[in-house]
Length: 441
Ligand code: FHN
Image (cartoon, rainbow, N blue to C red; front, side, top):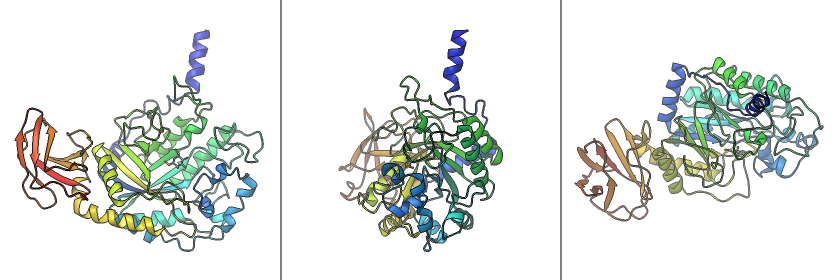
């Protein structure tokens, strides 16, 4: 009996059950394939926190009590917000989908919610539903729309017991967590009912209740009832892809797996220490500078070359690249981001064929670069190699011919003990972003 109760106790607090027995529908599987073909998306962190120009964690970082933070919406009036401009910027960059914060950790809804007036329509002088405008424009321009939605909530009194964050924000020392989860599921129902077909839900914040059990990193102090939430989403829109940025191995019911600031299998930032690369469609998300939400002091801009190479490496790791902007409080995207995205778009114009619709190639990722593959084509992406000759491991199939993708000049192929030697007409230029060798198999 004691063992059974222990077993039950441990299982109860683990989300491992989630949507056990989940069978993705045919349309969900099709959506997964399209997602993997799309490869490149725009991440948008925008909210009333943008007003304080110190990123999206400012409420917690500065310990701003709820009653003070609630003053912010009255200043939020993004009259320069232009959904057409945002979607066109993404499209011109070569992006196929947009993932925007419908609600971040501060609990403020960037759409017209009926279960709360803590939203952009009821609490700001702007009074318009920016997600509605974006959804309409995305549909008009053939761009898919995903919603980021925070599990964790620093505003709701019912997000109780508090987690690792959001302590001492002036909320009462009481609350009903299940009431909070019902509230969250109701907002998700609004988002999946009032904005047309939604490409996916990008959850974040599950880790706030992580129990910190090294033996079972999936254990949480509270039950998130992922089973209920995931079943709800799959019932409302079966093709909507669920992803959860929990940094542990995926739970049943999830349709894609994201890696924050890491390529799948890597752990540069410490986020992915407890994660495993699954068979689900993969996505890597990254900032263009050092911040997700608008941060006026952050000048750690990544170069266009670094970001294109990051996109290519993600594709070589069979993953999408979700690149972030933090719009300014008036609704404009800062010029540094607009310029870089424009330059990425030019590169994608010329080389997108070696990215879109591909999967990670037969030549594993290497310091010199990666490979992608599509049909009988293998694209060897040489990102960092000084020489005109490059050895790659033997491939299972036979290479019929090889050429430089850019100008179709032939590349000589010779067999070696280690595998294959590709001899290019010349060594890659020093400032080359990606010298692509196209192999016909
Ligand atoms: O806390 C969030 C953070 O604000 C941001 O949303 C990133 C995006 O991947 N995720 C969390 C940090 O892991």
